[in-house]
Image (cartoon, rainbow, N blue to C red; front, side, top):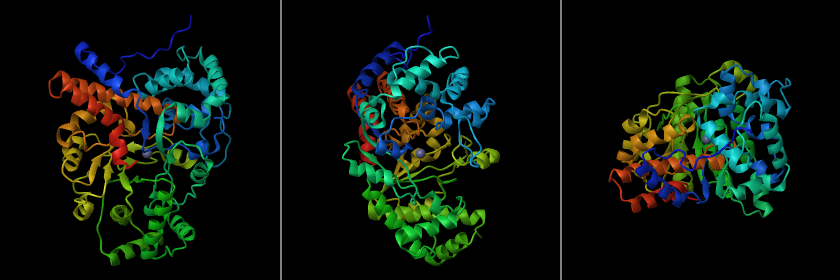
Length: 471
Ligand SMILES: [Zn+2]
């Protein structure tokens, strides 16, 4: 007999029988709701081309930085996991070998959300019923590979089976959005939209900033060597993204700093940044100014702003040099919001037509800064626990620390924020269960009526995301 793989019906629910019973009833209301995925990093090419996924490792391991950062921390070289090198040096290409490496080390993921997501993917998406281990690795690999060869495991079929109502990807303003255009033209009814992520052209410290800005000029026919032409180019590009369904922008800055400088000062700073002469302080002021400019543009074109600050990106220089960005070497930093956001809020904080969704990698800011800010300013909403805190404990902590001051309705539902497409239902399942668990406690403590909790459960799982992202 092989060790079984099972998903417990009561996973993540409170262990207290009374609360658990309430959580079950609430969950019954939301478990079948469509998935709204307003922020994430899946590849639009998958849905545009609808080709079969290559193999289990290429789908589930190679692109998932949650998976390979843990393996790397335990001494597995990224080359052995098939992560491509910048210099073209050969890396492992044999999916089965990569899968075995992973399966032999599956115990490393005990207690992590990756393990919960992965179990859900194996069990629910691929019908696996035996536990992953060194011994079962090949059998499970074969099962997954034979699934992936079938039409019902192609990207569009999975999208439909997952019950995804809308899925947002994230692209650079320099991206021609060919896949999104192809999707639009294809007649497929699945709704996949883009998101405007301008970091490469608004961050003077981004690789190739000046060349990126020049390219922005070429694409838009604007003179991006001038401050005014640069702003016009950004506005044009935003309109292009909106024409392909974008309802939001996203900003991944090292801090939440905003600025509100005069035009002459902006032009001087911009010229310095283009010439490569911006100091770190200049770069910080410029990025901050660009958040304020983006807020102004959002008032015009209606795109919702998301700010994802506080990641120390590419912390490991050797990994950055060899493998490039987004390779699991990002680390959260302490993040300040109260002073940082003030210049932007002084200008736009009271605008009822603007929505700015704040995220954090600094859990200590929930109750002290973020919930009080979002509980006052009409423009501000709180994004769900992000990245390292997209986890059961992270979600519990967020609700416990933010709800009393911000309420539920200054939050925006869940974002799966993932590159790992097959794990999208797993991630929403965890979020829905954790919200039901939290609501069940409030009901059991007579702080909410159960009918209110039922309505809230649906809001948190579905309606708030649609409303906040204007979907
Ligand atoms: Zn993201």
